[in-house]
Amino acid sequence: MRYNSSIQQLQLDPGYETALRIVSSVVGGNAPAMTDLVDLYGVQQAPIMHGIFGRFLDEHREQMGTPRPHRYNAPTEISDARSHVEDSPDYQRLQSKVLFNELPEISEMEAFFGPYAEQVRTIFGLFLHSNRQRKCGITSIAHLNRVGAVVRRLGLDAQDQYVYTTVAALHDALEDLLEHVSDKHGNLYGVRGYQAFLNRYISPELHAHMRMITNFYDLLLAMARKQIESEDKFLSKENLLYALEDMYKHERVDIHPYIEKIHYALEDAVLNGEVFAQAKWLCYCELYIREMAIFTHTARNYRTYEIKAVDLSDNAHGRDALALDARVKNLIKQQIYVNYGSMLNSTWHGLNNRVAELQEDALLHAEHIIVQDLLQRQSYMDFAISTMKKMLALRTILFQKEKKVVRETK
Image (cartoon, rainbow, N blue to C red; front, side, top):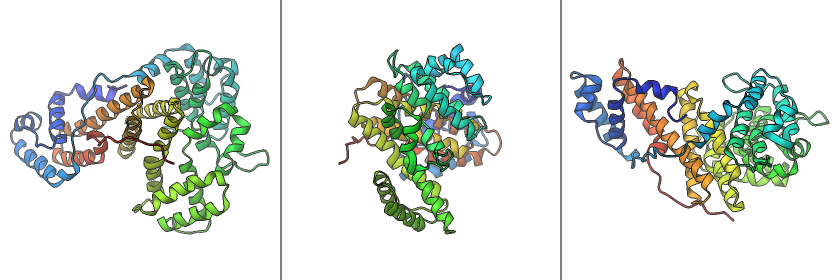
């Protein structure tokens, strides 16, 4: 997956190696060599391009940093497992049915999910009944089934165990179904009813992992937005904070810590424009992944954090079909995972391999977003400025971050 079809196609371009050297120079804070600019753009165009690159770097030097080095020998275990799984007849049978919105039989699912096959089938059925889909239009359970199968292939469970494989296959259940599935009284579960949902559909030994991998901050922000809209108010930062405060007064105590953390993260944040989207992104960056890292570290069990790596990798391998802003966000999500995973200073081999794989994947693909623009033959000046702005958007990936240690909060 690291060198996907898009990158392989770029590598066939005669200007590819030159474009890579230009990327290396610019990321290093230096205007590209004139010889490279001549090779890529031509003798007439090279001087103006040298000036454009130089001026942009001078104006944005404070936003640059130390280039992040490649680890070309980093593991490709997740990508390799995905390839192996897709060669498996058992997986092919499951996925071919799932893609046509058909539930496989329990007997067909037992190879991957063992004694949890019936639970997984039931949850998959809820996804289908609720018509939950990916942005590409296929059913959400195609992603879930593949993540579960890859986790199985990676060996996160012992041969006769299926806990982590099942958690992987159900990792989006709470986030995607609570607002679409009704309880026995006909009321939507919602975030208030997450425990009732778990009790009804999922075995108790899986609950802690399901809670850990669920982004409750998204669910609570969506609840606050719904309250604001029901009161016909503008979705401003002030109204969002007020809705959170009102929720705190009326919601169960077990939800209070999440609301407190959202409020604390937002109260000093500058939120302009799309307030809800910015609030979600802030909570993802500063709360969700960080706390998953801390909780797994405290428990000395990194399996749930590893599952998140498989989830992110699966989302990433189809990123070329996304709009540019979504591709950039996808890469930054990988980097956030890597940053917190690295801070744990773990000796757990599996976790460190997941971190290394996602880091190299993110860095390589960030660079190739820039390379792709540099290889454009027309409007080359426009593309050069555009891609340097993308470079700044991707700076958390392209430049090293000062290493700190995540410590458990009291």
